[in-house]
Length: 350
View 1 (cartoon, rainbow, N blue to C red):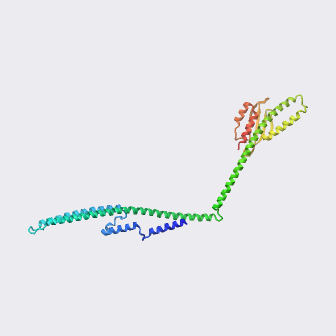
View 2 (cartoon, one colour; view 1 turned 30 degrees about the vertical axis):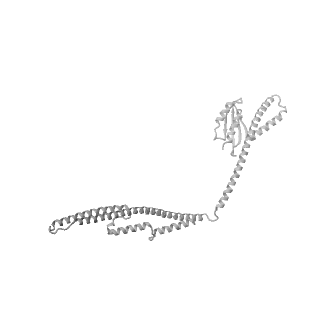
View 3 (cartoon, rainbow, N blue to C red; view 1 turned 90 degrees about the vertical axis):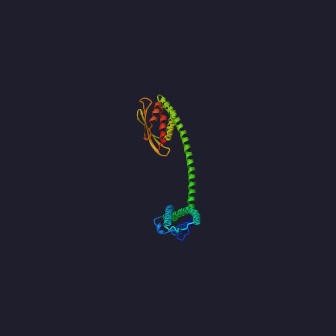
């Protein structure tokens, strides 16, 4: 409603401005200026002058004033010459009578005319000053009205464009449309859903943290079981020479087998295969932190007839370079540490 009122006011202002009957100051000043120039002389003398520009009018007035002064001087000279000639050629017995009173009277008239001319000049100067002041105000009013008219026209065009755009939107999106209340309600639901998801994410992160701690503890336990298994294997080999039929080692064998099964389930060890006397291949099913599982094959190559690790190869994780890990653990002959490092780095890959 406010935009329609403003549009109506702008259109009425434009109609009033374009009307010939509008009593604006700029129209009155233009009319007075034209009538004043018409009273002074024939309008045909000013056909080549642009009366709309005060600067050009001032230049023309100065030129005409100079011309009139020269014309007056020529007239006085010719009049004086004419009187002088008549005085010379006139009969001496009947000379023209010019007395001092006549000269004084003429001088008095001349002084009066000078005073009138001075007053007229002062009045003209005042009128010119008032005209310049009024011209400045009229120009400011004209610029302001022109700007207001342009702004009103622009606003009217924008209102029309907005209405057309609104009509197109209504045609593109028919009923039922999303209202402000519906959008606010949907926003509140989304905020509540995001809060619930955030709480759920925190719970999942806590579970992951607990699982990592549990995995770390189980890894330590597995290392301990590996050590115990190695000690048990040593004891079994020592006892194989003379106590092959000793049934005391059966519980120990069962315990070792169970420990090995636990280790396989914890580390994801799926297969152990001896390729040769000094080469052992281990297969793991590794699950990374993103929940994706992959099969990793680690081949251990030993120095013949010894327990010293010579080299190792990793297959299934080609995007990762394990050379630094392998070299560091080969120097220390730390096989368990190398396997744990390779598996740990694999779990953190995508």
